[in-house]
Length: 606
Image 1: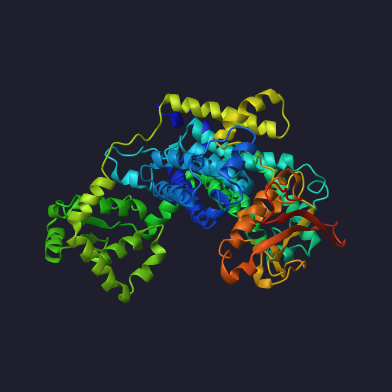
Image 2: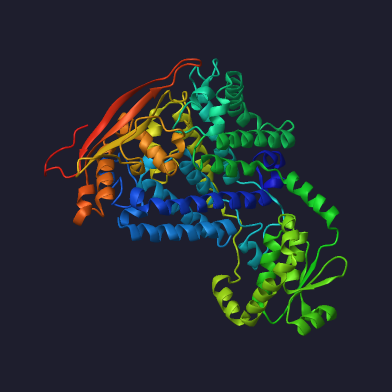
């Protein structure tokens, strides 16, 4: 007997609809893919030996075991190859093509990337790793995927999935908020409710809308109240059996609204996007059923799809359209078995789609009519049916049709039909059960629960696989030490330069108008912000060497030698956030002095 039938109440609380898992897969995969694309711009800075953290320094200074495929080579081309492989795996994961393999490989590669440079990581990076970990145990490809379209054995008919992995994933998502609320123990959260004021006072993170909202103290207090109590009580209420369906959906929207607020007010990188993707797992099956009923009322008769029985590639294409346009009720049949469809196919050398009104469509219009009936992409139909698109659309179809033999051989190799294993066996479910307990124990330790011996025992394993989570954003309260970094340099011709912003000429110590947008990405913002912190003081030397290499790389010959960077000072303009209504004061702190062409054995001075 299926687990959902044996434990119906548990299934209601800890089960996840397979359609929801498909939505989660697409959302998480899209965030992962976009995040990897941004990593290409920072290859030389963060992931290669030419950057701010050479492998030798990482290996010598890092405490605890860190395994990473990126440690196998330090050249930029090697990192690019691995990132390209990750992008392919992320696309496979998103589309549900060899889903389990793509999930496992994506998890290993992402953990490897995080282990390569821990100084530039944010909470969103660790959350991606945790979500990929639980995804390895779940049937993410059972709906709306390449696997579901081409599998020889059909996916499970029952939509609701219950397993230890579904328990682990749901608890993982809520752990981010529950343990974060407990760690937010400062008075700024409760009872003062000034935490949002202090968070929106951080120039390194705040966006224009955040600056505007911070002018209204009663509003920021209300937002502090909303965030803290939602994070504390929401994870408890969301698993409460009472009014589960509507309460869960409402809480999911409340959490999503909170992250939309983060997106609009604070520069937090990809963390809000990852969180929004994670929250989709609480979309109940009743939502999908309601959407399906609405779609049936609008389109009572689904279109019928006919293909050439002698073309295996044609059948696969139709099945993929059926999956990704979400048209499970549209039958797919050989045109040769229906006289009307056969006549139209042979006369026009085209597939055939016949809608509920018995109107037949060929080539590009056949595709557009499928889009019209799609509950997901139906809004594109008015655009796709424009007369200007029909001719190029038909041209594309004719090209594919003329070369369908080549496409057939290619898809036979890339997209073979195979028997899928949708559910994992008892052994792997047992492994998932063990990790459900271990992750809860780990998170308990992050808020001070004893015994510390078990925390020490778990640390090597959790660090290696990068699920060593700590949800302490703005905890115990938002930082009150704000400021901005200025790197004042001296060139070979004696002139002074702003190294970070050479277009400005001489160094300026004025506060940037919107400091959060002057870094070139969340990783640079995170890295430069951490240079101020004492625990990252040893990183200043390597950042200094990186600045020298970057600036002087093309200035070692001819007249350009006069523009060589000879020395610089890293100056942190420290600004303590005052209480509401107070006035901020700024002081200069010299973090580091660096000589680019120091004599051998000389040590730069802090």
